[in-house]
Structure formats: structure tokens, C-alpha cells
Image (cartoon, one colour):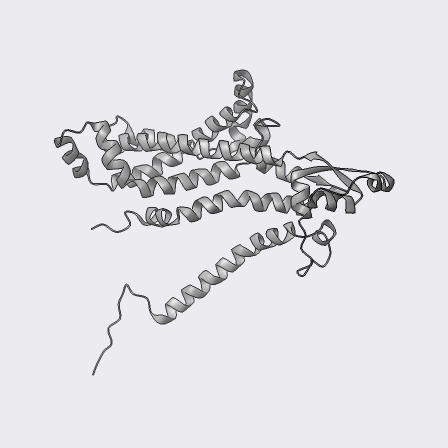
Length: 315
């Protein structure tokens, strides 16, 4: 009587098909809101609030024009006296008896998001990597207690420390400044960076550094020339997670910024159009706001996948 051996590691064809179906279904469910946001950004204001919702519509760039410009309503006689419109946004505005009064504040807010998010990510990853290396390689008194304390700073809800931080920033003159937001986001993200990077550095064999020290390298040279190249995947994965938090953060941005250093998340919801919320402009701002994270993650996806699975299998 012959028997068929089944691998306890390799899944069967039915299991693979079921897993694939679950993954595809999950991907479709998560993509529906994103697709709807992109479609809404291409609708006209009446189409965006129509009921039942329109799936088939005539695309227009009115949402993007309204996002980047401010408009004022004028009389028909005044609009008729104007020369022909210079660009498409002006033509769209005149079709609704309005003229473009100037640029909006979206572009400066978007630039603030770029500077604050990437600046805080850089600071967090640098400090987190150095601290993680110290915890991983040196005998630090009270190491476990210090690591738990660092992690506990991530457990506090933002509302619990919002008022003290607001009062402290007001006294220090850091309210509504890019530097203040970079320091705050770095302080929040550094705990995540330390814990993630410590796991990656623990997986790097100490023998590499010992060989470098024997060859005459200093500890600092061994760190930069041996450890950091080996920890590239971990650094990339940590940077992505820190960037996502800083890029999407809303509570502190609302409380501590109002003008000069305001980021895009608190600005997008207050885009007001004629008669209320300009949903195509809101959707256009959200669509553009998604692009940097999407591009950054896609460009580094290989390192991200390797970083997530790094150390999962010991040899």
C-alpha cells in the first residue's frame, strides 16, 4: 500500500488558492477608498455630492484648480469685460462666475510637510541607530529598564501630553515653527527607531566588528564601515515607519501650528468652496498628499521586505 508524503512546510494547492483569494479580496477592499478619492478629485463639485453617487462622469481638473488657487465671485458684466483667460484654471473659474484671486496656501503647507516629516525621520533614524548600537553592543547599566522607559514614551496618547507641550513650546518660542515640529516628531519616533534598530543590529554578528578592530579600525570606523552597511535594510524599514507617522500626524499639528509651520493634514479639511466644503479640492489635496509616501515606499520596497523578514530564520 503506497502512501503520499505531505510536507509540513509547503502548503497544498488548495491552501495556496485560498490564501491568494484572501489576499486579493483584502487588496481590493483597501484600494476602494483610495480609488474613490482619486475619482472624486476628478469630479465637478455638483457631481461629487450627487445622490446616488456617480461612477461614470465627465472628468475635470476643477478640484485641482480650486486646490491651488483662491477665487472670488464677480458679476457677469465684470467677467465679460475681462480679456480671454490665460490658463485652464481661470477658464474654469469664469464658467462659475468667479475669477482667480491668487494662489492658495496648499503648496506652502505641502512643503512644510516635506521638511518636517523628512527632517524628523532623519533625526529619529540617526539617534535611534546610535542608541540601538549602544544597547546592542555595550554593557549599559539598567539596560532593560531604560529600553522599557524608551518604549513607554510611545504608549502615551497625544492628548495626555498635548497641553504641557503646548505650554512648553509657547515659553520656548517653538510654537508654529518647523524646528519645533521636527524636534517633537523626532522625540516621539526615536523610541520606535531604537527598538526596531536594536533588533536588526542584534542579528549582525559581532565577529565582523572584531575582525575590523583587529585590522586597526577604531570602534567608530567599524560602526560606519561594517555595521551600517549590514543594517541598511533595518534603517530603510525604520525610516519608512517613522516617515509614515510624521507625515500623517494630525493632533500635534493642529495644536501647535496655525500658519508658518502648518502642515497639509490640518489644512486639507478646512478647504472651503462655494456653499460649503469643496470635496473635489479636498480629494485632490488628499491624492497629492499620498504621492510622496507612495513613491518613497515603492522605491525602497525591496529593502522594506528584506527588513521585515530580517532575522526571521537563523542559520
